[in-house]
Amino acid sequence: MGILLTVFQGPLLFYLLSLCFLVDKLQSLTSDGEALVNFRTNIISSDGLLRQWRPEDPDPCEWKGVTCDSKTKRVVYLNLSNHKLSGPISSDIGRLDRLKFLDLHYNNFYGAIPPELGNCTELQGLFLQNNYFSGMIPTEIGNLSNLQTLDISSNSLSGSIPTSLGNLRSLLNFNVSNNFLSGPIPSDGVLDQFGTTTFLGNRGLCGKHINQLCKDDDGNSTGSQPTGSQNVKKNSGRLLISASATVGALLLVALMCFWGCFLYKKLGKNDAKGLAVDVSGGASIVMFHGDLPYSSKDIIKKLETLNEEHVIGAGGFGTVYKLSMDDGNVFALKRIVKLNEGFDRFFERELEILGSIKHRYLVNLRGYCNSPTSKLLIYDYLSGGSLDEALHEKTDLLDWDARINVIVGAAKGLAYLHHDCSPRIIHRDIKSSNILLDGNFEARVSDFGLAKLLEDEESHITTIVAGTFGYLAPEYMQSGRATEKTDVYSFGVLVLEVISGKRPTDASFIEKGLNIVGWLNYLITEDRQREIIDTNCEGVEPETLDALLSVAIQCVSSTPEDRPTMHRVVQTLESEVMTPCPSDFYDSTSD
Image 1 (tube, rainbow, N blue to C red):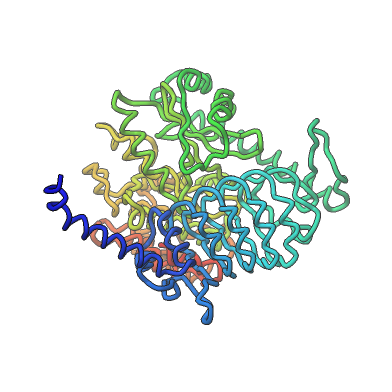
Image 2 (cartoon, one colour):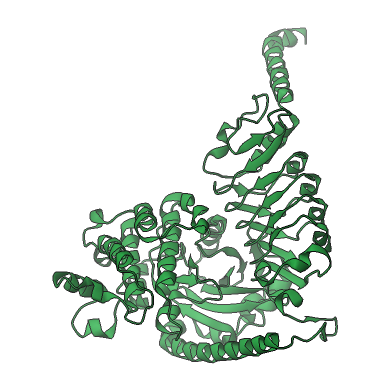
């Protein structure tokens, strides 16, 4: 025994001394620094911002994004917005009790908002918007008596708005829009001063702030009935919904007829009978980052009620259903039939990757249902429908500014897939029906990753037959090999479609033996390229039209090497097409 101690005494002593040295170093860091190190530990990925947060520093005051009080060396400002940070927020954030401003907006944070934030009683500004926070709003936020701005919009928060927020007497700016909040909006206290825009995009909320009557447990309306202009506004909304439903039903009939034969062959006879057969035996729910605030039992129960009446679309990847939960939240459900024996293991691994990809201009995949016969993918439901519908089916046409915003949003989403997400993704099926719009007509790229996910020996033939001819690059149709530059070509076709208001294979082109790219090339030879513009589009600016045409011409070059990258496309659009405005400042650096 004595021999063993003698042999290992040297290495063991060195290890113990090293450990003591590291502990001493960590102890030398201030309490705020230790809290930020623990915050960093929870971060799964970023753009590299946090690499220079070194535990061996005496304080965090020189760390990027951190501002300290010059005398006390306490952290008073933490600004980490727009740095692609992904992960939950550590409860240690509550140890920064001298913090005045916390800005984490436009990242990929998920999980619950830590109730420990209620310890930061000197907070004046709390900016958590445009992340993926879920769960309820902590009642402890009502302790922040100095808070002047609270923005938690565009997340996945659920439950009711805590009445404790009414105690925030200093609150000047408040935004909880675009979440999954429900129940009455508290009318006591400071919240009474905020109007409709503060609460938009939460279908479950009710109260006088949004002219929506609340109902009691028996389903009876409570509170006063809207009067005057409010009543007219409510009736107008009903008429609009009724008209939209009628138009939607007609479009749905036409769409179902068009895809009937394809879906019958691709998806089988059982699809028209509803999804009960899919989820009745051994189905399970997989949620990404807690994005679905429901139990698996509740979701499966809802899935069993879906049938052909809930179909809102169909395509080469499967039928799409509208999934409405009891609390008023709505999702889009895409049904994909299992293809082969090894489908499950491969598919689930790839879906985990797709579920981790979060970006402002991508449709969010929240989870999926693994059933014996199919995969049921659960996405965000976007009320604006598809770009294809907005351009070609609806009577209210998009104006020029709206079309530019859609083009830029789609470009940013595609650029993120090509250059910034991990792993990088080639979409393979960029087209107007795969660009979805939210209630503000902001673009989201959908179906990314599915083309490769479902690829088999006939995948490229299937893609062409399924109706995307006109968007496909010449070399892709010849070789069947997709690259980033084939996506760029498809994006160029999309730009021409948005500008002209015509589908890529419009009948007027086909009669002349052309598609939209051939038509553009013909107009260029005649020096009449501006004639491509949709004559029904309002507010067209010749300068921005020329810049957009220049981008489109480069993208649809017949030589892949001559096409720009999507990063370059975004840079050009922002510098030569977009008019800079405050809302663009926050997302321009993320692409």
